[in-house]
Length: 121
Image: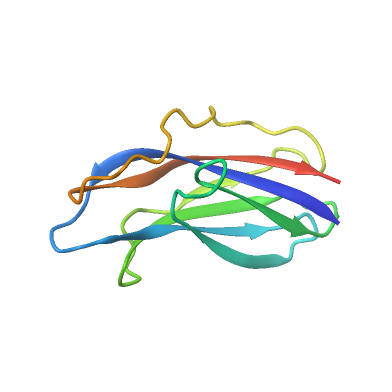
């Protein structure tokens, strides 16, 4: 078993008229190539915009996809995809989050702009 810690970096973006922010969905493919159950993040996580997944070991690289959705399930952004650079080893990290989840005004939402991946186990 492996522990896969995913942290999504966000940047404030204009919310389409009439839409309400629903969250950032995170999908993970573990080192064995198995799709893990997705997780919808809302910014109240500790640390914000992060989740730890439990996966299986293997030779494949972990792949993470993050995408923002509105409250009705419609996409707000293009997916952000990050891949572990070497199976079980190094990563090309994205800079750590610089913005904690703000109290978002109703005219903006935290769009995913990057993903960091840490795998252990």
